[in-house]
Length: 199
Image 1 (cartoon, rainbow, N blue to C red):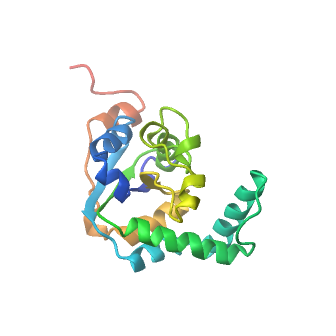
Image 2: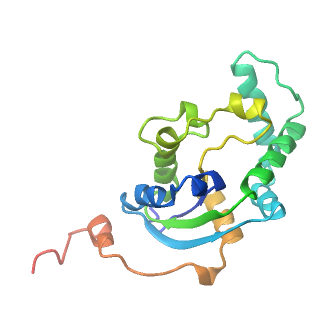
């Protein structure tokens, strides 16, 4: 088991504008994950596009997911070609994420990707569980986003798998921007015998 698994998290422009940076960091930090990279900047549309296309299969899988979501609701998808559907989604994402400052973070710890996704909640805020970041702090939905021809404003991007996280971290951070340091709390989380608690 990898006790130093890493995940990328982005607080998107809507999360920054709504003053949720501290709340988001607190939610991840209190699980015992360690923040090893942090910066704030406005990404270009091209940088955002490269982020989503790090996975060569992203367009196909995203387009299929979009089409299937319409069908699951008993609706006719506006676009039947997965690649064209994904290109529309990508256009919206580029506009959304390059619209203002984002906070990019790298979190490290055992099962970091899985834990972060659990805390973050489902992609659509309206159907995200209470107690998750998306479920607690926003009410946006796919339906309203489609009516407005924009991306769903869901506060966070979180890596979907350890492999995806590895690619995303390299895209957003240089090696020298990531910190290697020790937290006292790691002794409680990872030390087998809890040595050193008693004097």
